[in-house]
Length: 222
Image (cartoon, rainbow, N blue to C red):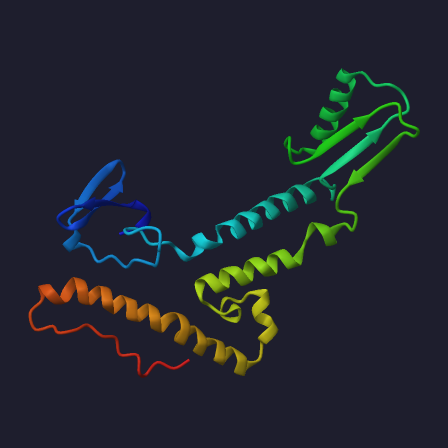
């Protein structure tokens, strides 16, 4: 069953039961009819926590960065804000009209780019704020590498296996074979062990003649 459609309902007699929601309908399942492969979550007795949930903030930052870069390129490499200085006094309604006209030309939503219009200045000047180094500031590679490293860590998969930039630093054949071995030993083998625990609890009591469910992983190599 798709986990996002399942609701767990606590129950005093059988610990919990399950509701499956789809197309406005609800199908109920007793606890004994569901094998629940639950990930670790110390703060909840019923729901597990998806690995990527721990990296939600990093994913959000990466999405914000991509949105910013899209605006950056669509407006010809403009920064995050600008100041327009004028020698003469400018009425408020004219300031608002100037700001609105520039925003329309740049096709940016409010909040994505801000313009400060100042009057009675010494010089008439247009000054961009932020991104003084151009694309070097607009494309911070360090942020992308940090996000990649965090997600690879949460998934328990070496970066070379996912084809990430951080994985290409160890691009030799021997290193990649070692990464596959680490992936199996650290991530997959414990996961398989958790699977057979759930199968033993759910299936063995109902089927006579079955003592234990085990996965034979002795022939698996990296």
